[in-house]
Length: 78
Image 1 (cartoon, rainbow, N blue to C red):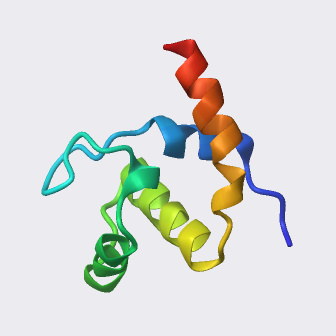
Image 2: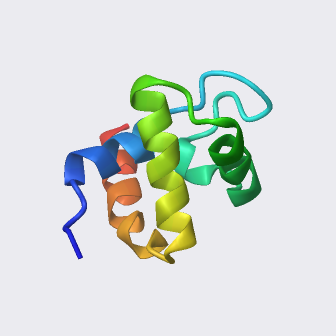
């Protein structure tokens, strides 16, 4: 299994949803059904789409344990 890119995971923890029902919520906090909806409809182009897809893969594969250390690290920065 490839090692996740730590920079990508940090972005996932920092990045806020820029529009819609969950505007302002961090991408890692988005509910799985919302991420699945994007998967069916098509992820947005660019970085946002890549991060949404990454969030879904993490959820679907039970890899959420990768995120708490990054979340705590980000919390200490603010």
